[in-house]
Length: 144
Image (spheres, rainbow, N blue to C red):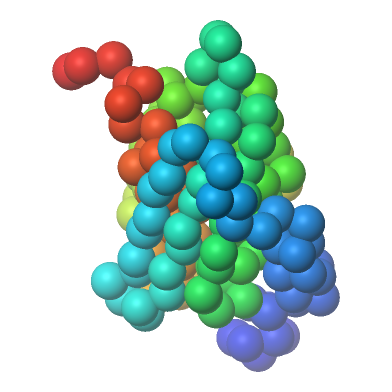
């Protein structure tokens, strides 16, 4: 399978359609953003959390390639119920996997975009939702 065909699978492309279910909601209190240095893609995120600090509402504005859109959709599918600490830990595992390889990190269905790991120019786009979420949730993270 050629490079683009291996990367832009029907499954990856179908994920981008899901973003319509998560429009940016200005009423949500926590805001974050991210920009990929490698491709210029951007993601703005708004989050709400419950009394225990778990994500209970999410909206995004994504201006990214299909890989970035797919990553955002995967994030949105599984972000509910997660805390700032859990998001930060997942972000670190995914970032390490992008650099070092190995097994796909534990985030539901991340394997759907695993082929993009072989394209370093797409790594920034993959990280957009986790980076924006960390930005939004930074006030909830314990001090280091």
